[in-house]
Length: 510
Ligand code: SF4
Image (cartoon, rainbow, N blue to C red; front, side, top):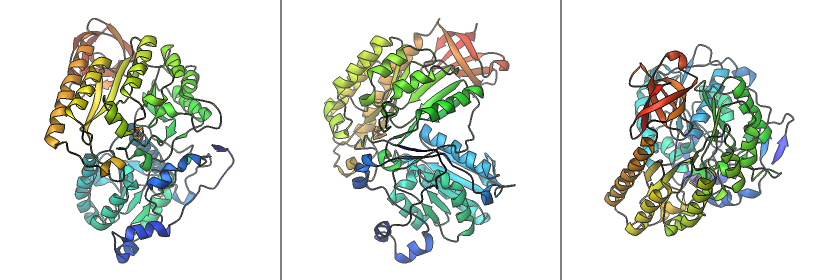
């Protein structure tokens, strides 16, 4: 990685004839010329696999162009976010950029002058929701032709999505990719003055742009990106193509951001990355997540979490640092995806069932109280009943207290999407139900162990269902509801647990 503290021009990439010709197979020249402007570079599997050798540049010179600093005066923006915490945090950056341009946030889509849909590509269902939403937005655009409709996030990085938008949703004004967020001011300006749809999606592997303005959603909990992208190339996953190569922020930049959050009164920070355990592997000096977490224990902020982990990069030093506790929470989200070695092999997960169980054993030895949660995919192509049962066994052996469970959803452009699949959807659904029943049983059993215990709750606000009740989370990420004064909001409060439910705990302030 090259560190460039001096002012550097932000790199720009321009239209590639190759990519245009790829579009032409789906679009007529006329349609492309009419609706397609600026740059479009769809992700490329071959190029993506060669990318590890490329340098990453860090830019510190970000500024909103002077002619855009008040362009949003008396105007509003609305952002709808789909998908993971990375997207939630990208939304905070986009909200920061829009605010710095003079726009005000609105929670009423109908009133907005700019609508941004920050999309997710991880499952087909997430994509369908976005196309459904566009159906609702179309009449708004008819009523107000000056409205700017923008599509960004992971879906924008997919060639098929861009083509579908060009063909079926020409009222969309702007499409931009995950590597182009910092260009939002220039893109809004282009969209304002262009009659054609503005498309700017770079398939470049991405640099790191520091000092982007952020408008954080909360005052207690904050997300901090520690790295971007993923180089694991699991065969079902679109992320390595939509988010680019693994690239770590410099430790000093992460530490400075967490210190600033502590000074601002934040109580909890979640370090974000698609595979945070690979943090530092791309840095030109030896440094890993363990060292970063160690440095962060020195900062006066009560709680630090991280997500998401990959078992392969979870090293002993990190376990040692986490076991020392202090402000590092002992909740570990460790996606396993399957309990079958054969399925793990064709998923290209780069770990076996035995590797995973050995890692869990190490974690349990050093951190007996740690809560483990996971992600599991059911019905991967040609998964047999016996292979699925190996997953159920593993869930029981590890004793996961929660799991995000999904039916496999093919993603165009990934290797697995080309494979034949002999598992009927009905069988996949039935397997998902069986898995969920087991996970729920374990979650409930874990919750029941808290009855009679005193836990520390970071009180976030009133419960959604009852304004008399306060809600917050424990160190192990358990939702607790209890009656108390609103003055407790924002504080760490000891609560005695009186009743357990499957997903939450009830208690009394002590
Ligand atoms: S490690 Fe996670 S983000 Fe990376 S390719 Fe695998 S599933 Fe996708």
